[in-house]
Image (cartoon, rainbow over all chains, first blue to last red; front, side, top):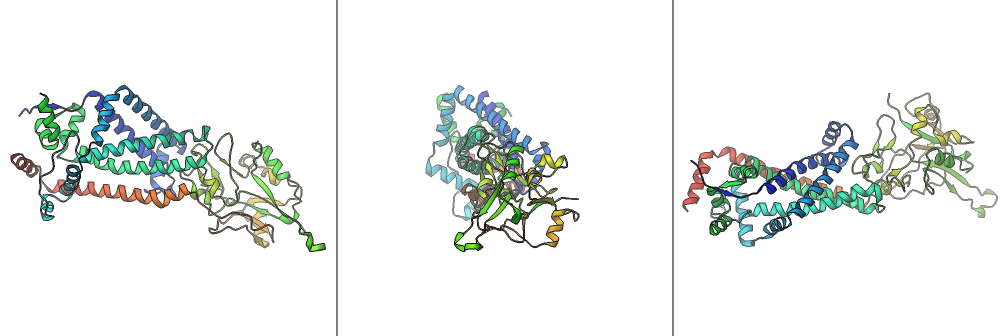
Length: 235
Length: 248
C-alpha cells in the first residue's frame, strides 16, 4: 500500500541533524574520557580505555577540543547562513502550551514505560493531547540542547584559551564544572532521544524522515496533529 | 622494582645560603619571581638572650602519598607516578584550571606565567635520567639535602630513615603524607595552609557528579523500561491501538 507522504525536513536540516548527532556522540564519549578516574561517574575504566584508544591522554584532549571547536564553527555558520530557519526552530522549541504539553509529557511517559492500563489505573484517560510540529518531549530536548550547546561552547572556548591567554584560573575551574554539568544534562536527554529514534517502534517513521525528509500522512495525523492540520490548511 | 623517590633533609646544617634555590632556578630556567623550592626560616628570638637561635628549613614539593593536588585535578594531568612515587604534571593534558595550586597546602606549585600550566619540583627528571642528583642536592655545600629511593635499602636516604628519628611537616584537616623527611627535628612546623579544595572542584564532586548519576541513571532506566515494554507488546497490538485511536 502506497501511503501519501508529507514533507517534513529539508536537506539542510537533515545535514545539520546528522552532523550534530555524530559530533555530540563522539564529544560525549571522548569528554567522559577526560575526567580523571577519581571523579569519573563511570569509574576509572572508561578514561583508561579512551586514553589507550587514542594513544595518549593528550591526543584524547586534542581530538575533543578540536572536534568541539569544529562543531561550534560549523554550527555557527549554519545558524548565520539559515538565520530565519534557525530562529523559527527556536521559536517552535519554546512555543509551549502548558496544559497541553505538561499533560502530554506525563501521560506519554506513563504510557511508554508502564502502558495504557497504568494510565487507566491512575484514573487518566488514554487520549493524548494533540501536538504540533514537535511534541512536548522533542521541545524539551530541543530547549535543553540549545541551552546546553551555548554553555558548552562558551565554557569549552574558555578552557581552550586557558593555557594561551587566560590568567583568571577561577574562571577556568568553573568552566570545567559547568561544562560537565551541561554535558551530563544533554546526555540524559540524548539517551531518550536516541531511544525514541532508533529503537522505539512508534517513532520509526520519524527516524526514516531524518533521511528521506518525508513522513507518512497517517503518522503526521497521529503524532503531530496540530502540525498536520496546518499543512492541510495550506494546501 | 618500583622506586619511591624521597628527600631526607638535615635542616640543622642548613646555613640559608640559598644555593639550592639558585641552582634550581638556573637548572629549570624558572621565570622571574618564581621558585620551585624554598628555605623557611625560624627567626631568632633575642629575648631568649644567649639561648637565642635561628633555624633554616629547606623544602620543595613533598611528592605526597596522599596528594591533594592530584585529588583536585579534574583531568588527571597531575598524577602520582606509580613507578617512581613522584607527583608529576602532564602539561599536554592540563587545561590550566589552577585547582591543584589551591589544593596544595605547601604552596609548592605556581602557575607558570608564560605556559599557564602549573610548575613545581620534579626532582630534576632530566638530571636523574643522566645519573645525576637533583640540582639542589648536588649544589648544597653542607649536604643538608639527601635524595634517594626509599625502596632501595642501600640508598643513603633509606639508611637514614631506618636509623634516625625523623619528622614531617603535617597538614590539617587532611594528612598529605609527604615524602619529605627532616632528621631529628626542624623549625618552623606550622607554616602550611589548610588543605582546601577550590569551590569549583567541590561543586564538581559534591553536586555535578551526583546529578550526573541521577539524571543519566533515571534517563537510562526510563529507556530500559520503554524497551522492555516494547518487547512485551507485539507489533500487531500496538497497531490495533493506533487504529482504535484513529476511530476515536
